[in-house]
Image (cartoon, rainbow, N blue to C red; front, side, top):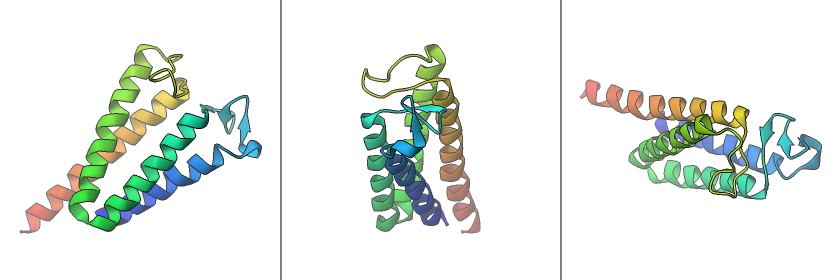
Length: 125
């Protein structure tokens, strides 16, 4: 089940990475008029999606590490965004308040998936 979640999450990142390059979905450098994006942000989403697919294909343990890494990274991004929502992360990745809350949601979901499914597996043994 963890691998299925990793594949699904990867496809979501890839889809949104691709949509960010399509002018029909972007107005004033905001995806759907809400989330601040730029080329680096879109490329980051594509890379995360591809990494997630590789982890899912590699196995359950890799999928779990993918979700833990994703949760920690996006948690840090959310904390940075709470500090200053107008900050461009690392001076390259566009970010705004909506991105901060989306990052916090991704972090919480990723960590929940990583730890809840690993616990269920060990409880069955």
